[in-house]
Length: 160
Image (tube, rainbow, N blue to C red; front, side):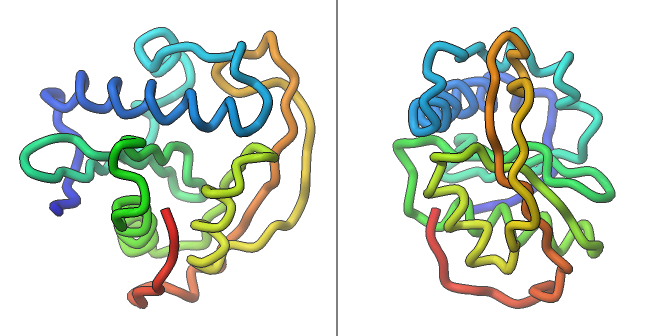
């Protein structure tokens, strides 16, 4: 597996990963009807405002993550590759690259993502309700997590 910066040639690959994984995320949170593709929402939702990393396996995009100075804004893994360490590798790479404390939101019901982030040292600091990012027609509830980045440079066994 190779974790590397996003390239414009990755666009179709991250769209495929996002769309498949977003369906799982929304279904787990009872929001299946809120699904929109990355192509429909990515630019408006600030995808390219973040630093983007891509996980490549056998020459294919297997996942991607986006982060700013203080927040993990995107992290999706191809559902066909769940539980293969890709999510963990992306979280670890984001923590190394950022070098600063980070926050993120996880939809209530997305227990797999919550477990991944908690195993990387993120802690729930709040639970909020509001409009669903990417499809504001829907209400959603999310856990807000924060990491002091004390795990920087450490590899922790965890789940995707």
